[in-house]
Image (cartoon, rainbow over all chains, first blue to last red; front, side, top):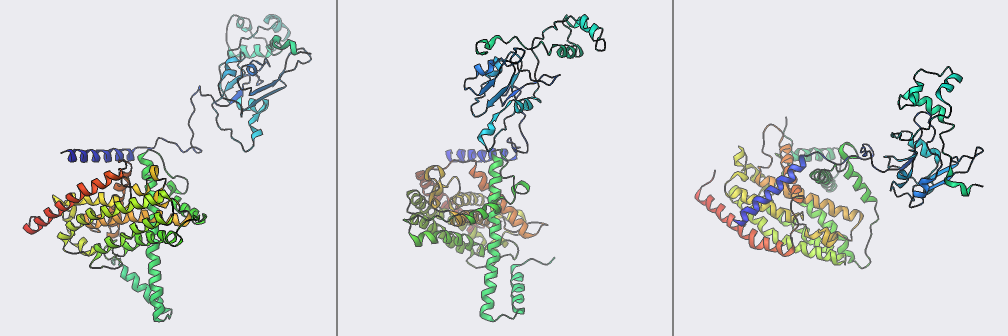
Length: 208
Length: 350
């Protein structure tokens, strides 16, 4: 009977193989169709821009550069005329990047993010070093939640409204009490562009 | 519709050549060469199709896609592969046995194709209806063993030699249960001719030999097991066991020589399936559709079964293989033959 039983098992095995034959493939045709990557997946590093102004969120504080374990991020941030640091050069070397995400953890200004993009192979090694403009361009279609603390404009809203009556709106004043009306935010952001950058005390000793 | 017969095609070809005013000695030579080319072309197409079919079945059993790039679901993928193999360098081992190394793939290829002289693809679609048809097939397919041994010996490679020796042991062992299974059919059809065997199963579906209880199904099962071993397919693929022998007997072959082994393997698989259909599934017998379509359809179903074997069963060990053949299959097939013959003698059949 052992022979008969094992024979039945063989037939069952065939049945299982046949059942799989009828199933739909679980793989995908890669270049034609692609996976939608998980939201938190760590793809290529990009620089984020402000949603309204379209300028880089980066304040040239260089925290990401310090956080990077493989020194893939290279930043030049000299002081400008107004003694404030500006971002002269921001390069990410994707040959060195290990996609750990520590730079994103370190950033206080929502300036750097890991996108879900994973296709950046090139024929040339030097093409893997991405500069500021390219990183910004890549970051344009990355959605993010802006958690930056907005500084209040130094001039009080009333005074501002008085000087610029064209832009004055009746609900500008309640904005300071926590209203997150997008229009007022936009107005604030425009006002704050001059004062938004931090004082830049991170690199005083190098400053000459 | 006029019945499609190969001899009509032959005579049409002959008349065409006569009209060109060709003399007699050359007339026969050219006719036979053209016929040979016809068969070769048809079988190459079948082999190429089977390679694609195998890859698709393998892929879908594993829930992949398989070849998808070239044409609709990659239908001309194997044609491209064959062209690639034609272009490849023919690597020759320095210490090979030149004569044996060269002729092994040729013999393998020819032996695989010789069987098609007597396989009836449809009603009248047979090259030559020998009265020893099935015996002839058994005889010529044995050349495959010699070619594999030659390949193993000529390559001067330990893996190739092991593969060749294994194939010799395996194929000689499994020839016996295979023939014994076929003999049961011959007891009932009363003829070795393939056409007679098919015609003895004509009429209704229960005339097919597989429905002759109780020995019919047993004969089919023992035949298909032995045939799997003959065609060197999983779970009896010891001659080319990838994990043990790298590639087995064909390890030193490249380019077109490898392609010949490869195509011969698939032609062999089609051969054993075609024989199974002829002997057990009523050959070209069917309804409504043309006979050759029935034959091809049934054969592809048996091929599908062989391919499902590959993805269901693990490979046997060499000692298990031999034990299974000599201690189980041979006694079973002979007992089955005895029972079948007794039923025939007593008249307990329909």
